[in-house]
Amino acid sequence: MAIAENESKILHFAGESRIMNTPHAIRQTDFTFEGQTGFYRGKVRDVYYFGDLMAMVATDRISAFDVILPRAIPDKGRVLNIIAARNLEATRDVVPNWVIDTPDPNVTIGYRCEPFAVEMVVRGYLAGHAWREYRSGKRTLCGVPLPDGLKENDPLPHPIITPTTKAKTGHDQDISRDEILAQGIVSERDYVRLEDYTLRLFQRGTELAARRGLILVDTKYEFGTYKGEIRLIDEVHTPDSSRYFYADGYRERQEKGEPQRQLSKEFVRQWLIENGFQGKEGQTVPEMTDEVVERIAARYRELYEQVLGEPLPEIDTRGILDRIERNIVNSIKSVNLEARI
Ligand SMILES: Nc1ncnc2c1ncn2[C@@H]1O[C@H](COP(=O)(O)OP(=O)(O)O)[C@@H](O)[C@H]1O
Ligand SMILES: [Mg+2]
Image 1 (tube, rainbow, N blue to C red):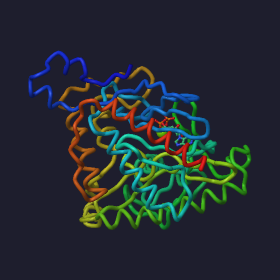
Image 2: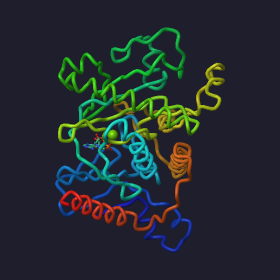
Image 3: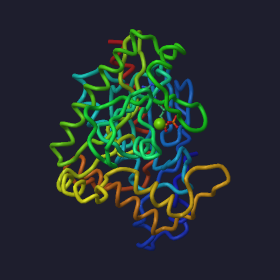
Image 4: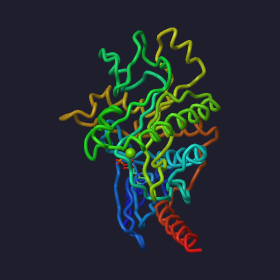
């Protein structure tokens, strides 16, 4: 049986409008489908396998520093899924991707690919992890040399690829191109393709962001193969996989040495750090009050509107899990049907 956060509250207080208006947050799904061949619960997404197809449900879970936070964020799942779907569609001409159908605001259906064991991180600016490394004195990142004299959030001379390993557990690790090839994690022939795709996707992402008054600072792509062909998988240009700045006033803020206006999960990381949590051994996640949850939810809604340039549609959150389940069943059925014609 599927569970949603607040469900018990809603049953208990049925009829009381304040509680009824609290949107459902989808903490996890527990469906069992006819024809299902497997299941994977990721940090954020629940994945149902159907042979060489899969249904990826974006839940409202939120992770930071590779830890799943104790409370789910209403609307976060559909914000992510819709942004990813739009960007996958808008990059289809650059690289083939895994998507066949988006039958529900929280669901994407597509080809189950054999993932490459690296994440292709690409950066146009010196921010986040790259800045922290640079600040500590490093002048090469993942084997890529960095010039002296840069400040936090400065543009890099050209976009750089700083890959990470896809750790099964724990934190992803920086890795260089040479190590990836030496360890045979990806063949040179494939890796050259991944690099080319990554840079061209980042170029497209930068153009798409610019139309919305945003700067795509950095992002990561995952790739896999399906029947021998390289495809872009997972989510693309979402706030969970990317960092955006507001373009307006960027230069002035850099000149004055002021922080940039960020549109990313960074505000969640900041809140955690301020409350003594950086994902290290022995640290505990601070308590997430209703107010904190609502503040994070509001940021995700703002993100949606900024990145897509339209308001997040209001939805009826009752029966949300039944809706998701039904939409998966129907989509898988019609995809299978089409395959047989
Ligand atoms: N088309 C695909 N084929 C196979 N695996 C995929 C595909 N798209 C995404 N994935 C994988 O599905 C998972 C999505 O769930 P997520 O919550 O991101 O999990 P994780 O905690 O592993 O990052 C990821 O592990 C991602 O690599
Ligand atoms: Mg992931």
